[in-house]
Length: 308
Image (cartoon, rainbow, N blue to C red; front, side, top):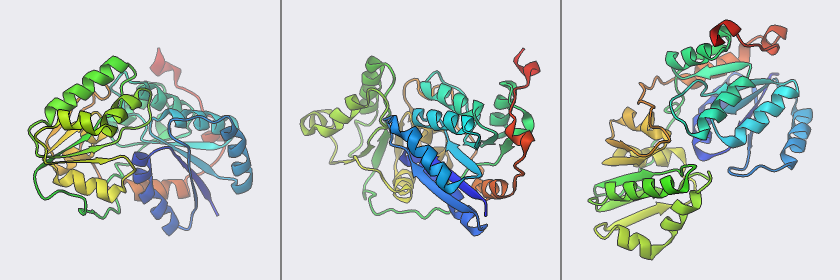
């Protein structure tokens, strides 16, 4: 039986990968999912990965997206001789460190899964062999049930703001987000990821006095500091009047629902909303279950003519 080892680091990745796990199970493929702790790199991780891979002997290791935590296991899996598959490869457009992380993961990957044709073209222009790049669409709305239990019964704005590498820009982004939602009587503000400077945003969210001064008009401010289930997050997003922030939600989920958005700061400045094509999880599962693993796949190289 083919074994797929899926790595993840945060809540957004987990929601995108879950439908793939379900589709792989339907095909009789063994799936092991491991969460790498977000925001921290433990030296013991490499020893632990070695022991895990020795135990389960995965045929393919799936590494998602663009988190710093995913760069190291992608490189380690590659150098240990495993076939690495990069989920959400090829999306470009900002000068945020995540951009470099995504590129680094692709460099160590033998199979590259792209949302769109444009993502595939980006990878080929960067020297990736075209036959390794697969346009599979999105998994964002596959196998989803919406949960509206936390939705306020009055108009509300929703904020998801992640930190910028520059603390001053993080503070500026925070001020802009606060100003954007001043006129809403309801507010749902989700906690940021654990990137550097996250404490600037988290300290603001944790201080009732500061929040009270920042939002004098709001009847209720709902701050969710724990991870939301994806169906609850999507329910909140679908019903909100405005989504504010610098998350990839601005490019993917919010446009799918037709939600008004405000993209803040530099994180996704040059990324444009894309047309979400659902059904990616089934395509990915069939690919991972059936792709031929041989020396051609394993011996990766770059096409130098595209780099000159």
